[in-house]
Figure 1 (cartoon, rainbow, N blue to C red):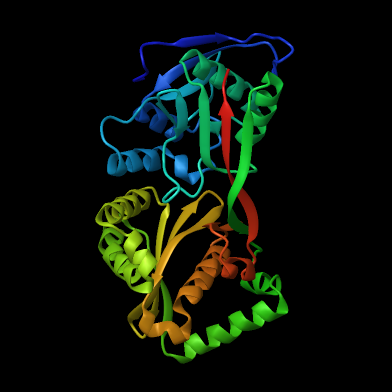
Figure 2: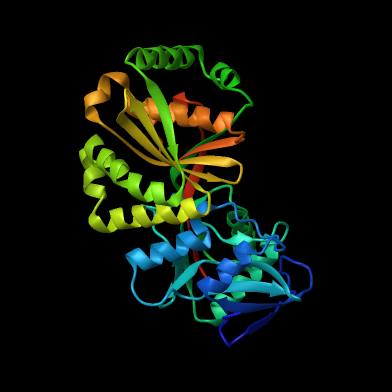
Amino acid sequence: MNRHEMIYFASIDRSANSTTDTATCRVTMETIESILGFWQDSSRTLCWDCLFVTPVWLRLWWTVFQSGPIPRFPAVWREGELLGFAPLVIKGETATFIGSPDVCDYLDMVVQPGSPDLFVEVLLEHLVEQGVRRLDLQPVRRDSKIVASLGRFLRLKGWAYTCIDEDVSLEMKLPGTWDAFLHGLSAKDRHEIRRKLRRLHKAGNIRLRVVDKPDAVGREMEAFLRLFHMSRRDKSLFMTETMASFFRKLAVEMAALNIMKLMFLDVNEDTAASVMCFDYGESLYLYNNGYDPRYLPLSPGLMSKVMSIRYAVENGKSEYSFLKGSEAYKYRLGGKPIAICRCEARLG
């Protein structure tokens, strides 16, 4: 199983500060390979609803941006049942999430539904035993079950704890038809979208080209990166060679898992814009985009996003996520904000 040979047993002290029923749990230190096995095991009931802590994402992030072997992650078990794992890195007395806010819109722990309180209690007691005195978790969604469980447990223990909103992620539920989506917008925004779509189609032959096979994605990522650099100076500065390497590898690996959807807005066989999306679970995630400034009169950046929403609706997705950032267009297209916060705690 590639587990660390040391297994830490945590017999929970049922005092006035305890949050869960009597149980004896154990903590193992798992490799990224064993975490990958948990993800692929359909018999496990872990909730892998955070795209950015899937094993493929974690492994790639570490490989590109860090050095040395990938750290082992604590996993909590109860009588042979895996309750969850925490993608944490421990440096000195501080535990943080693996990953970084510039490429991971939000992070989380992976927990079995119905078990977050027990998982958190066992995990934190284990971290204290290992000398961890500070927990610094960011970025994390305010509606994460882990955030709620952390708050309950830390307050009961009397340990210092703060959770401060720092950003938002915008997302929306999708109806069953494109017309229903448009009618869900304000009259002004609906009129504006229809007007810009008409102007786009008057420019010539328009198509949304979806690339999702690994070989094709690998080739077309160069076009995406070119558009990304062209669209804004701040984006060009962000896309260093190291960052471009991450994007290329991420796109191909996610395509191999049928998660990547690289979309191009073509105007008369020329590419005006592109959006990089992830088709994961019931949602389509808008991860990043770029456009050719020559087509600015056609609003290519906005229209490529609008057409990706239509793609999501027509392919049966129930949710669409614009991910992190409070840009005005996200609200105009129906996005609802979810707070992204930073949670810090003193342990012990």
